[in-house]
Amino acid sequence: MERGFRLFLIPLFFMGVVCAVSFVSADTIVLNSGVSQEVMVNVGGGVGGSFFGIVPTTPVVVVPPVTPESPGGGTTGGTTGTTVTVAVNPTTLSIDMQVDTVVRANISVTNLLETEQTVSVSQLELDDMIIFEESLVIPGSQTVTLEVTFAAPAEAGVYTGKIIIGGKVVSVALNVKTLLLLFDSNIVVLNDDYTVSQGEELKTLVTLIPMGDKARIDVTLDFVIKDYAGKTYLTKSDTLLIEDYTEVKRDFDTGTLPPGNYVIALNLVYAGGVAPSSAHFVVIERSVSGILGKIILFIIIIMLLIVVGLIIFFIIKRIKDKDENQPGASAPAAESPAPAQESQGDFFPQFPGTMG
Image 1 (cartoon, rainbow, N blue to C red):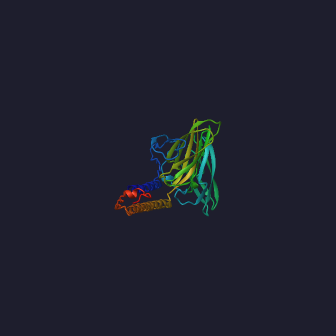
Image 2: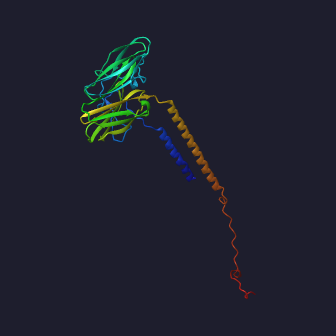
Image 3: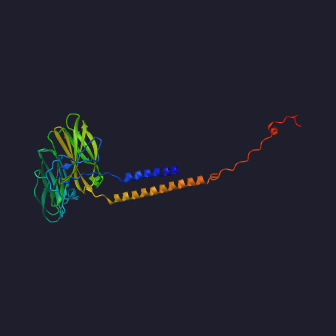
């Protein structure tokens, strides 16, 4: 019986482990609550994932002071909540430029009404870095072009902000590099449609490109997840020794990031320069189907545990009953009568002529 009980425990243990692995996950997120503290961690070249600990540090990304707005940078649909009567293209801008330089970009604005309208143009968190017309007169059902001039500041980094055109939002990221550029960098979001459900991992591919002669050099990869209002939600640091063209994958736990538009910024820092890059992504609410799927999986695992337990129980019971019902198992076998003692005559052979 003891042996059967052990057999019963072994599969229950392994199925319990499977159940635990299916439902336990570590979503790590750091929310900047307004204090001058951020999370920084140094990990090895092959490590990309969650991180822990709060230490005082100077933010890697230089952003001007902001007034916090709604979580996640406000809107996921690219509007300010007012009645929108225009369409804009593109809805996101990622501009590569060097310090103290100027870059121009065009935004197409379409009037969705059949009558002429005047729309206002404003910006958020791009003070002293942008020039544009503050209003546009657009004929009915027509499209006009808004020319925007970006002026890079004197300090390298990734700067984020918004251009608001008639209630429609254009998200902007300025990747400002140093003039002495020994390396270039690029970061790409690998998730489908650049969209991540709450709690899922943000998957990225980082490309490091030497611009001069080959040389083995230590570089630091400073990652920042922030919204377009300039609020920083997550920082991470990684150090690599590179010489040639290098590609590395890095994943980030989105944890409890509110739904909204975000930018993953990368600063490639090396002796004498900074090579920033950035990529846009969207966080959406966790789908109900995913939650239901986990509930169904949990129910199935519980049912399997019950079925396996019952099968093992009946097998053990049947083996025990079989052992008890075997012939001679309950009573000792009857003693057989002792053989009769053989006579001496029977024992020794009789030869002819000796009889009588």
